[in-house]
Structures are given as C-alpha cells and as structure tokens.
Image (cartoon, rainbow, N blue to C red; front, side, top):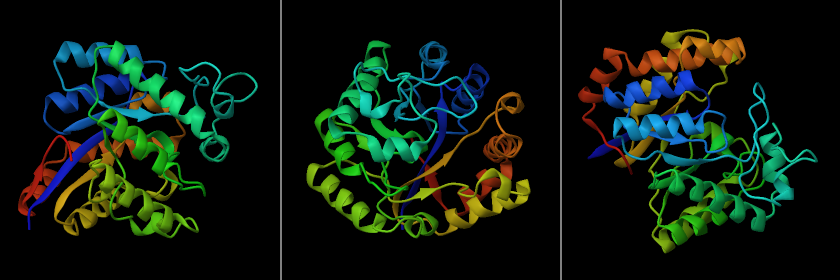
Length: 278
C-alpha cells in the first residue's frame, strides 16, 4: 500500500514572523507545501520571501472572513457586497460569509485573489479555504462552486475524499454535499487529497504537546493509500502578542512537531513518502 503525504504550513501572509518561520520550514524540508492569504497584511512580504528563496508557489488560501485578533481584511474585488459588512470588510464570522455569499460574488472574489497571485509572480497549483468557508462546516457547502472554479483554472482542490470523523458528524447534510462535490471533482478531473490530517481540537482543549503529537501520529498510522495532506498552522512565539494564549500555544506546538525528530522517524517507519502535491 503506497501512502504519500503533503505536509502543509497554512497561513503564509498573516504576519512577517510567521512568514519567516514557514519559509525556514520549507527551506529545511520540514514541510512540503504552504498556502498564502492574499488579503492579509503581510501578503506582499510573503511573496517577496518566496521569490527570493526560489521556492514553489504557495496554494491560494481563499479568504472570505477576517481574523478576529487583527485589523479587518478587505476583498480584492470591488462590489462583492454579499461577502462584506457595511464598512466593506470581511466579517470575523466565517459562518456569516458561508451563509450570505452569492455564487456570483464568490466567483468574482476567487478570480481576484487568484489574479493577485499571478500578478505577484506566483502561479499556484491548488486552492483551499481559510476557516473552511467553502466546505459547509457551518451548514451551507460552497464546495461545488469551488470545484467548478478549479476545473476552469486547472487547480487542485483541498477537498478530502474521506471526511475526518469529527467533521463528518458536525453538520447535518455535510456528508451528502461532500459526496456530491467529490463526484463533481472526479467528473471534471480536479485532483483531491485522499484524506486530511491535523490537530482538530481547538487550542483550549489541547493541554500538552504530547497530546497534540499523539493525536496527529494516531491519524497518520491510519492513513489510506494514495496522497493525503497534513495541515498545520506553525507559528513562532511572537504570535502570542495578538492571538489568544491557547491558540498561540497550539501553533507553537505545531511548529515543535514539525521540528521533532520523533515525528519524522514515525513517518519513515510507516513508509509514508512526503510529497509537494496531491
């Protein structure tokens, strides 16, 4: 059984310290991919670091909501009113974005964020979703529209073929919408990962580094054949200046995991090959 794994550091662009950390992880071969938030404050800094390091382009981390702890983010496309509040910024409530987005505004903003990356000199091979707004985690799935966009622009899509159990049980009707989107992706030849692995618990419920590592390694031992993805949000200690303590601690532990020799030995023992894309 051949098993492959993309190890992804999410959220490039969120701040300069996180950018520097993720670039170091890529250079050291400790992650094999990253994702970029084009609307984030440090997105231009991220582009500069990627190009200077000669690294492959990040995936487009489509963003339709603001980070609660930071100044609100704005869409790159004008006139996408269903995606914003009266002040023209994204809401911090990802569920609100999911429920209110018109498909026309979604397509317009998708094109704008992809165009921004192209104009910056980056040509992403895939698309995924910041805060999960495309996946229906809060009741309304936009995954089919995202699949159509990926097919039109020859992008891979982070939509796992198999739902993690906590996600599959979270929302009524999610499994049906998920199955329909996977079938649509297959029909349109949009490549998907087999499964997603992460530390799924919120920061306040992750009480130790050992707990986080054990959770991830347990999932990796059960990895199916094919190419799956481990997604993490590694960040340096400085994120504690603007992020709630528990979430900042979890992100530091995710960074520690990626630098943990025991983690990489476990991958080798399980004969899991690390690859850059699914």
